[in-house]
Amino acid sequence: MSRRTKLAALAAASAAASAAAVGLTASPAMAAQLATGNLTLNNVPVLGTINCSSTLDGTKTSTAFTVTGATATGCGATVTAQNLPWSGTFGPPATMYFAMKAAGCTYSGTLSGSTSAGPPRTITFTNQPVSGSGFPCFSGITVSATYTFS
Image 1: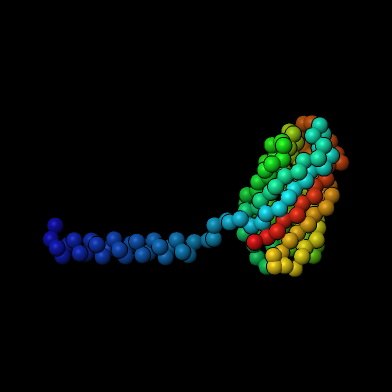
Image 2: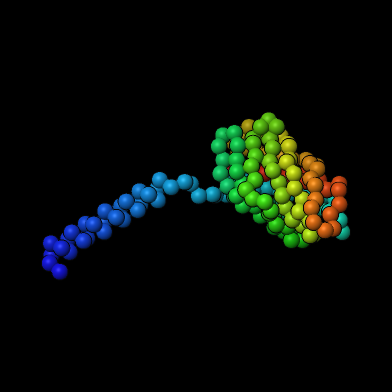
């Protein structure tokens, strides 16, 4: 391969790498940690009250947010997010669709609560009723949560 051909190949490779970097920069934002907080499921059959540390991953605007990932840790029972993505608004009132599986049941519903103006912005949901699906599921389950958004 001649020196001229090598230089042309190097220039083409450099241009392709630059185009790829520009394409990467222009792609939609990846979901990042959206909020951290505490989650409580109240009146869960057999388990009673489940208290967890929780994180939400996703994206937000000034008025709304989308949760693409959610974790609940330190619960003393396995609690996993279901039916993602969830959507929410900062309100007032603050709202968020919620669905978590615990003790064989998926508890879901739209939570309604209060929001602080921030920064940082904090949303608080207190004793919000959710419905259960699966076996064995009972009525009377409520969710309380506080999330501080980054």
